Amino acid sequence: MEGTVEVDLREIFSAIWRRWWLVLVCMVAGACLMLGITACITPQYTASVYMYVDNISSGGSSITSSELTVAKQLVNTYINIIKRDPVLDKASDLIRQRTGQQYSPEALRAMLTAEPVEQTEIFTVQVTHADPVMAAQIANAVAEKLDKADFSKCEAVMPGFINLKLSDAFLQNYLEQMRTADSFGINKVGAGKTIV
Image 1 (cartoon, rainbow, N blue to C red):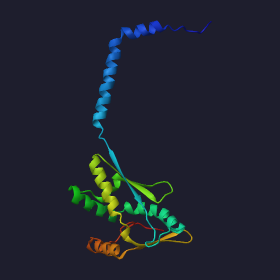
Image 2: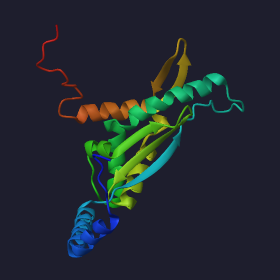
Image 3: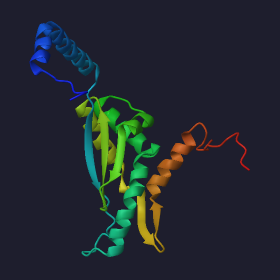
Image 4: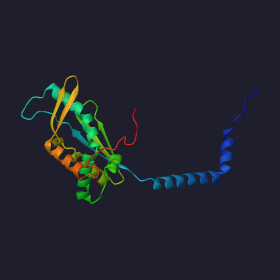
């Protein structure tokens, strides 16, 4: 047949055997390259905390469907709140007290992810850090400082709104932070921009 090429495996293996030193050099170089890359990568550890949103009225023994609905809807609210400066400032103070290490809210926010767990009243807070013990300390501190005591009332209102009433203690603390801040709590977002 025209155009066919015969391949002899003995010739191929013979050619490889004649250059065994080249095969060995390539294997050693590849192993050294992988070892060098692995040594340069800092391992990252993730600590997770699962949090349950409890919106059940105290004193009642039965759970209503509206309480479950509100709790499911509050999950995303808590996820947004947990990434805000008031919570992260409190967590930073707690971490400094426990470990002596200081983290800014921006640094904590960069390490933190929070996600709802499917269609439940549970969400997870994950912290990624080079030190596994520090990752756990940060995750626990953030979870502790997301305090439901910041809200005095959580209720669902038709047609699908959630009313959150901030507690007096939270408002008092927030106003004190505004009073002592350089800008007295004035938000400078959009300053100097013309909006038509």
